[in-house]
Length: 120
Image 1 (cartoon, rainbow, N blue to C red):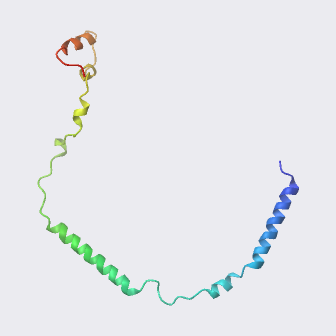
Image 2: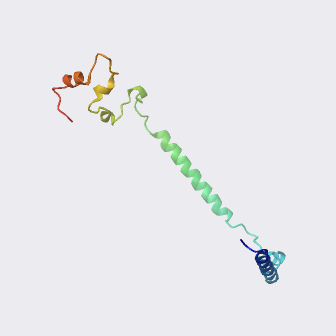
Image 3: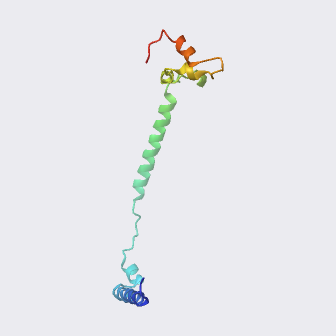
């Protein structure tokens, strides 16, 4: 725990430091008066016009390029799309999990129907 005297000493030290800084720093009005006054804009007007003209030409060129391209062929239907990695879903043992097992069915029945297949 800190003693109340320590806090007062710290507050007094910061107060003295603040008064010292205030004494050394010039007033804001003095700093503002010494600042250089700008009569010209930072970016000349001619360069803004040149940039705007270049952007307009670029947009006109892009619009002409898009408009002059030959039309694409017919777009396939989303229903006809096939996943390029669909074959990865055909995992070994899929037939065991495909249908819910009934009381009349056994894992041995499924294993006997796959005798011709090689294990993977």
